[in-house]
Image (cartoon, rainbow, N blue to C red):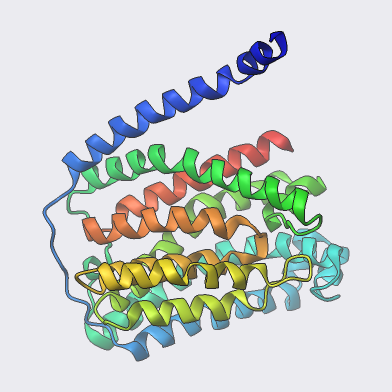
Length: 340
């Protein structure tokens, strides 16, 4: 009996935390419901060709271009030293090379960021006359949308982090070696970051990634796919293709995760009165699959992405999702800096 009482007492902080979270989540959700605007639907004038061209330039032009600039002009050697630049050129399968690539990649991410954003705005603007507000970049109800992003962060962050911790704990015990940390975490644990690199990491995490990823996934992709009945199917197929190259402990865990969600997606597709639900689900899974390099983070990020997608669709604005995304990444940054 004493053992049973002691066991129960050991769990009281968890019970208190759950009660506090439940209270905060309920209050935040009530506030969210009151702040939501009337439902509306903005035009999506950009074409599929413009979408493909924008994605190509964002991922396969600007990033390789600035990698070449940093490595071949001597800028990388002046900033990082010749040893780091030499490691970058060794190959992606070498652990030290991966760390060096991540360090240089943080600089490339920050440099490429404004060019990637301008690519979307200018390409779609000149190509189809797309206005920024049609992508969700609007100041209309900005204050309410900022508050909605903050409230959604209060609701989702504990849930997403708890899910990630649970899945990571299970995989660590079932498949040793089947868990891979985010490159930023690996670099932070390596202990080689300078103050300047830490600033680049924080900027990339809480500014560049939220703005660019929300503009791509929720603004460019989700809005375009939600106007087509087959849009969600395309997103699901793209998620599987993206997940296949990533392997965790010589398995195809990311791809299996995508396949495991197909029944749920088909339910959303069948129940939805418009293609929007399927597009949100498919785009959210694609967003999660893109992060398969840090397995099992896609499992938890899928839940976060559903919240981001729903908020973008419901408000027809990217302000709330960007705020939610930035605050969520901010928590990860604080945790990483705390553990360094």
